[in-house]
Image (cartoon, rainbow, N blue to C red; front, side, top):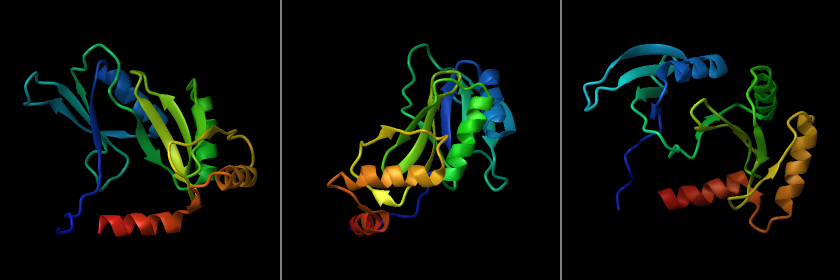
Length: 179
């Protein structure tokens, strides 16, 4: 079998009920800027807003009107940050912004903060750890604790699971399966 051509996940697009409210949320919470707006030529002619935080990407989020009533079908929209200190900074920022129901989870392979946007889509801010452990896995953690304490707690939690190994070892196994 030939190798797959290169493809990287680059952006997410989803329907919403209240476009202005969703644009305001992603602008206020994440600092996205609107790069374009307009009416689509697709059936139903949804109004769209394109948003980015990267000047090399026209959009990282595309929002379109036309979401039907009912629960979201999105499991989560995830934002990767540079490290545990950034996760802790985001936690303080979310609290300062009045975001409610923040759910901090240590998954063994990542520290994550979960919360919801105005239309009930679950958002994740996360950073990887140095370990792999079989998923799903996780416990609540306290992002107000010092990073060194959180690392030690996560290492102890991961060490108790028989699937654990260094992330580099796991990555090498997956790379072999992909190629």
